[in-house]
Image (cartoon, rainbow, N blue to C red; front, side, top):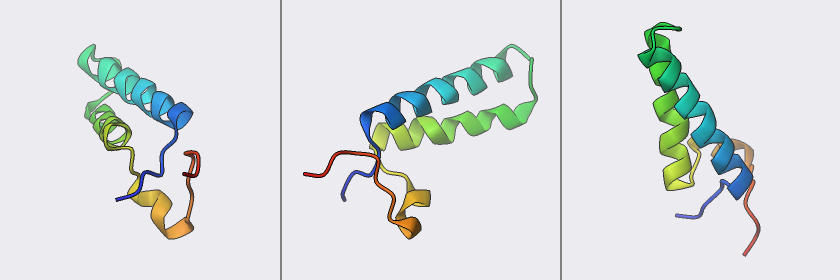
Length: 62
């Protein structure tokens, strides 16, 4: 499977996911903050299913 997430996109996803989960664990936001698991998972596998239908790629072409 081809990667479609670049380095900057990956870093942003990891940061946003970590912030959402951190805010949930501290009780600042509700349980919906666990949605932060999704950006972390997509960053780790470097593949975003939402990008596929639109043909978006934020990584460099090989």
